[in-house]
Picture 1 (tube, helix red, strand yellow):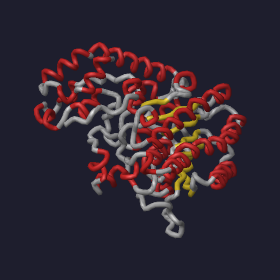
Picture 2 (tube, helix red, strand yellow):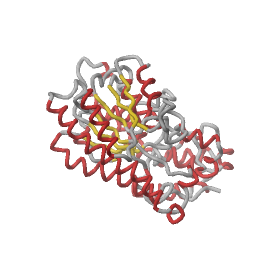
Picture 3 (cartoon, one colour):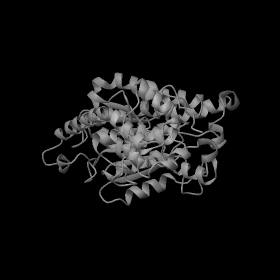
Length: 407
């Protein structure tokens, strides 16, 4: 462990040769073999719980077929764009009825909260255009307003009478864009704290409070839907809950989301309801693309997007965990890294079929991003990354924060 930590911190000083990278691969070969064994065990356990007539019983991934969530009623908050939209699309692709909330509308008569791309109607239309029975239902809802959230759940009760899956994703950036995210707390003032926590933490709690009567009502109506083992609540968080990311308020908010999932899971365990927090990696969202185009990405973030994930990658993780019969015993109350779930369940990123982006704590991500500077990369062969082992640093090492930037 200590050797791996030193490898990360001093990666920019490594000998820039193929032989050097090969030696890294050899040194961690046993660790990689152990990780592969654990992944095979997880997939085998998941497969053993599939129906005998289920086509997935011969495959580690659910995405060779559709409609596993037919008739399930889902809600994804903050799904006009980004990760929320990706989750909504994947739920819809599996045949679910998906309610989509946001403050951006295609209807020009509504006062949109921002000029970002994407609206709730556009997400719903994309779901409705997918093959299969999936249905998207757009609802304008400002999750900073409790009365609007209450009205949302009243609508779901009138129209569906139940709720099976709740995904708390709504998040609001402070005014000032990417530049404001990178300011110190005394420069941001209390307004940024309130913005990030009102829609991004408190909103998750409020939505969960209003959701529970509908979830309980669905349980009382009879057994869970055919393939859904139990009701499921997902929280979208990030590595920011563990290590410093962007700013103080952001990290506290994400840590709060993870703790919310953990403690809700305790109170819901005897109700047979699973609660999981998801940690995407570097995600190529519409906002990411916009910040790249206007130069903010290179000015403030300064990270390559070679290993970025698509928003639907997180959606696939949500679907797999929700459908896993062992999610209550093995995952409820925990945080799960999306890229590592892809390895466990055997799914890829739909934006790049056949590709699984590495976990942020994997050497496959850390060394190219932080360890090797441009000069070293120029001296390595184009395929050097295949020689880096997919060995993951412990979470306690990741909690120490980002390594020094390579010069």
